[in-house]
Length: 138
Ligand code: FAD
Image (cartoon, rainbow, N blue to C red; front, side):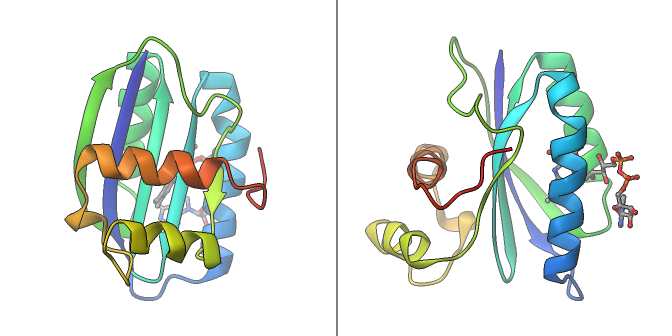
């Protein structure tokens, strides 16, 4: 099983309706591909974790990288894992709420900037957010 973490810059004109559309597509498509993960978004950046079998994750990543709703995609990590950490989420979503900013401040950030995160920090950040009860599963 592969865990891929990337971040990207959201398109300028992106709205919450676009985010909702992305989540709807993810939650419709990911289960049949055996993919789980977490999407974080705050104003400028996306940070996403994708977990699943190698071929499925690679194919989805190529589709996502081609999506005009974001740009400047950079992979933070791509690794084999024994156990998925986000299997309960077809695509969890972490809105920028108080917990989000509290966790960011623990990383020394007052604005969400995944570019400045190490792969370990990005994983820790998304895992912590996944454990917050406010996040809607599936
Ligand atoms: P569709 O039903 O074809 O698309 C749903 C709607 O999204 C369309 O009506 C259209 O308005 C809009 N849309 C679709 N593609 C684009 C595009 N390239 N540019 C602008 N608008 C578009 N998809 C997943 O399946 N799983 C994921 O985990 C996932 N994560 C994503 C994370 C990010 C940050 C982004 C930007 C996109 C993500 N997507 C994800 C969407 C992915 O890029 C494809 O759009 C989607 O997989 C197409 O699936 P579909 O054909 O079922 O959706």
